[in-house]
Length: 609
Image (cartoon, rainbow, N blue to C red):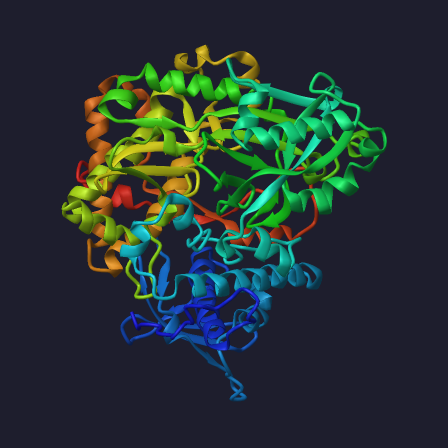
């Protein structure tokens, strides 16, 4: 593809305004993403022109977009941003701009004016964040990024690959971006509240104490100060629980929404105390950057980002630590996950949730009003790593530097393996164990690029890391005997899904949302053709099935090799439901079925390609 070259300032500061040259670059990239993903979701259908890899999109408005792009195996088009041209009959073509593109495609998007305004706000926030990312990543090679810590690398990633509004962040202003967004790199202290034990729903793993969690978030002097503030308020740890909150959440949500509890001293404000934290790409999960610690902290953050408001539901809190312990014991007792391969569980060791006294009186209020105050402590991966090991989120694999070189190319080069050998290890250590979790145990993780990480040992895939069990873990609805050891009260809380539905946590969450972009990157940079990528993936999954004939009935039940799979549409769902509040989180839309690459490149079938 044509290179998009721009001389980005190395010393640009967050408050230096918007650089027009960088702005034009990121606008082209956003339009390219919109063309690719909205065509994939069948919002519109570009026409392939006789000229190879040339496309024309004719919109209902009469505006046309010409561009060059390669159609990939999943039916999406890998669009060259530099090639995009806007064609208008009145010669008012102008620059390529995501906001103009949305106006041009308004009939196809089909949102009400009010919802379209919200959508444009999400695009504005995404553009501002991408502008800062372009500054941050200017001139930084994949070689340099490979040497970064996990938290530093995460700050440079581009966000959800499917969502055009990947950094919508409705609720934040520019000062909030600078103070709390990972790409701005600002560290901040947590605000601590004392919450009456009478209104706190809390749980922790066996053997964990509240003091252990404080030690992980502050030094002894700060802990003494915090307890001193608690005493000054006339409370103690016997009457009140100490709960950290995000400073933005305190200013904009808790101090208002929980006014009744504050007035009755059921919630006491203490102060911003302790170590400083950096946000991960999810924004609400924070990592201690003052010192190496055992836990990350996940906090309620009531901003609309990507698809929903990022609160913490209360229904999972009582079972979270016990579910984590059960998963860790499951892995330890399964030789395939603990000896043949290596699966690491980032346990959620403690959590608490406070229901809002005002909103709980009224049924069917939007979900965000019930999720404003909560915290989860989750194990940090560093303590689980051995010598010469590092953990990376799967979303890092397809991240490219300013020269267009993806991170996966750097990892493969450093490993000394060829592309096929390296990808074989990736599939064996990540994809196959995810399938094993489901077929052997009836447990399915929503395996997108932030939930699932891979451990690289000497740059070779060596282990799977799973996390986020409260809302992103499902159980099959069939009577798998392996699930009988899971306590009944936990089973009642977790979603139970039919086999034909739960399989899409892998097919959509992992294949379409992660591997679709990894295979695009490997072909685009000349590492491996997509046909070979999916032939290899199909082969590794078939090899696993041959090695486990006792699971044949479950392989038939949970079939990854069907000719077609549903097309799950994230952007189209927003267009259809708009921005009206609901008592339930929004669910994706479904389009026409997709051709399944695993079926077409499965060499065990008669239709061999």
